[in-house]
Length: 269
Ligand code: DGL
Image (cartoon, rainbow, N blue to C red; front, side):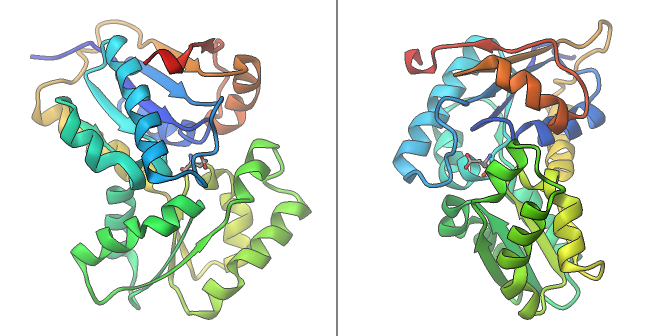
């Protein structure tokens, strides 16, 4: 048995493309429907209720596209709405937090883990809860770093602006003696070099994307839903506003050109 239906990948905007990159590497035969809610990004400062509403609309849209499984490729949307989504929909739905938490819990040697993310993700304590399920002796030092999102989207990841911002945000975390740092926002892998240089080589950076893609593969294998790989995979991109901007920046996030994105009216869902 197999299923050639697409996988739905959803983010508040462009950040989820860093997760998509790993999904396409680990599951190269799968068709993809990507939705970026570019009209309503950022989700970081929004309330839980609002993020749940937006996530459900995105899921409704992707279900209409016939997806067989959904990846919430957004830390904020995962932290705020994954549980509600899993309860309300009868389709495999995974997020990025559990995978990132697991990687961090098994990476740290001194049991002090740093977590950076949007205000919403940090306020939710989602990483702390997930890491605590694996090892309650791990201490979490977290910090919201909202400015990293516009810096990544502006293409400034390797500039002095990014370096100064990283220095300011990461000072406290370094001083607390963390030995691993979770990039708990899908935009942050774009700044990986700058963040890595700032914290130093002895602190291991955890990008939840790779482990998320492996989790997705495991689900597809378990449920006999892998694509049979008989035809070229198709990638379709949808956004809720300004598709031209999405296509232009997507290149930087995905490290490949995309054919273009289509605009949809997400309010209909
Ligand atoms: N994609 C979001 C995340 O991973 C960051 C951007 C936003 O605030 O919506 O948390």
